Image 1 (cartoon, rainbow over the protein chains, first blue to last red):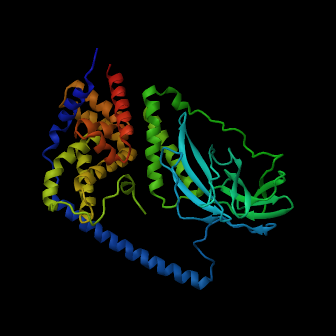
Image 2: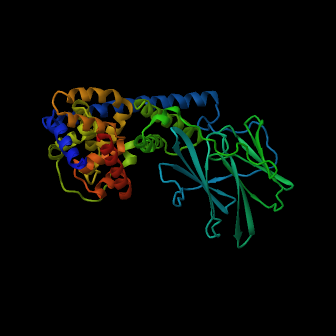
Image 3: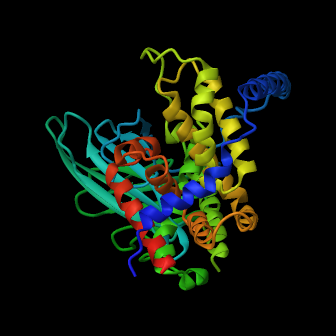
Length: 304
Length: 166
């Protein structure tokens, strides 16, 4: 039996909306709501202003440290010189991710530009965070041309990457990059031949320019108290192994059509989550994971 | 900080001139069609009225900055319907089908049920295409996606509806 689905849809939609023409909507009611909202905003802003003033006085009175600085800082003194990643204005090459995502761009030693894209995908009813790291040479140095998309959640997937570019002044430069670090990591010490340095990660990534060409490099990640978390070197590859997906039991009973629709549910929830954060960092993204998973679970439960 | 509405489609700003339309005229012109759109998206007249009213509030607040109030209003309505579905949609869908059963034939009720089961994006595109009669390009602009995505999403939605009707 052939169904003219478009015609049937038009007829059904016309029938469903037939009774909606005599509405109680009025432009005056809209203006009334706007006035109410403005009043509420005024009250809230006044309350917030009072709160800000009270906080300023309280911080000044107690001589408290910078209250906005919530990043994890090491309590111990790491070995070697500190190297800093330089946050840059978003320079956004074409994203390798065809879905909602956030991105952060930072520079290393004024020569390399690193962009981190963070997103999620749904695998068999489970939400998994996905991250891509792109390494490029800073203009006008030639593009180092490496993009690496890894799938990981927490510490399940860590990778190291090497990239080389030919600097016309300094000659060949090598970059050593460790991605997929967990949010517990406060800093990473990098052993480069006979010298060492340390760095604080951005978006789970640390990167060092290395001079050692004999593979005598090693990285050790530490928490803020100086406890070792992970260690990588040519002899000890990143921990975690390959991505190990699990299957949500509720997903197994879905129809094919529902399975195809599921990514859209996750994508919408992710868009919502992204729109709440101007500059997502790891902690906020980790907050998005359960939100998106909850939306997916609710949708799966409705079809159980 | 942007809201989800901003992300979906930010209103075109300032300098571009738009036809001098009074808000009351705009309200009268688009109100009924927006209500029908919302009814199809959420399945409840009562909820649809609230969503449309709130959407008008948003447009009114940005009236001086929006170049295309009709297009912007449509996007706001669709986004609010999506938010509503996310938090309260399931329970209301059952009630809606109860309301429909007294006034419509079985086929309409079946289609309304299937339409309500579609994920937000598919449902929105189907309604915009076959009820609002928008072109693929207009839908792509309204939903901030590519025309290819619109075509494939509508194709999948129709296939899903066709399969479940047989």
